[in-house]
Length: 339
Image 1 (cartoon, helix red, strand yellow):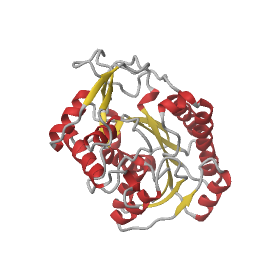
Image 2 (spheres, rainbow, N blue to C red):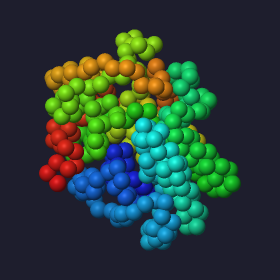
Image 3 (cartoon, rainbow, N blue to C red):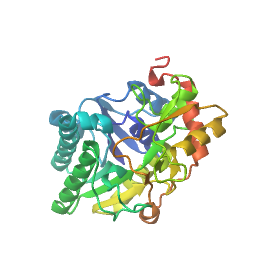
Image 4 (cartoon, rainbow, N blue to C red):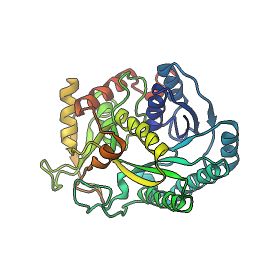
């Protein structure tokens, strides 16, 4: 099995690349480092003890994709590459639509030209309507609150339509909830460029003293402690979900969507408290105004993935907190630490 991993140097892409290599799969990686770092791939190679071809470039580049598919016997594509900031997508919607949709179209065109029939797509729980009953399952109505979410929604539709048009095509749509944590080695992890948009790296950097406090956006949600509730999943469990998705794609055609989550919701204050307890550190926080458009609670029903993929999350919230702290302590400035 030889998988092309687009965006393989990113947070989820690097962990999935490592999981594939640990399962003795071969891979080819393409990344333009727009929101990732070359050091991530160097560490994936060091941790796995294996090498793999790498192409630096943009997945929107049809010429580059033709070269990659011509030079490598690709069995499956795992498509992570894309712009991913919700806030930035609101400010720059055209950039997000152009990049995320065209990259997917170019990949499908290259796959068609080279007779590659399996695609694992990195989707998101943002495709579900915010008023969906919880826990949300794959049959819930779809609808988005921001351009980033709509790009995932539209890419899903493109892939579903492609699978209808080509009965030999296998498409697996993986809807992530909130990935956190890091590889247990502490060598690869989440490395935001600036002030983190996601909660867990913000918590870890605050514990390390990089930030004075965590800004908690609102305490008047309809939740037990008033702060927003989300389904947090360890990134290594998420990576294993992709390994399971490849096995499924080898045996099935058509398109199928799966939630990758734990099925348990934790509030912002739950996460801060669990991090403090697991790592014996203090994380100061300040309650601020809630953000427009944030839902009270979003958490998954992951039963379909358990039944059809044979996958379920194994790591606990304590594991997520400990592994995040190990990564942050060893890499206080991310991949730029000592590199």
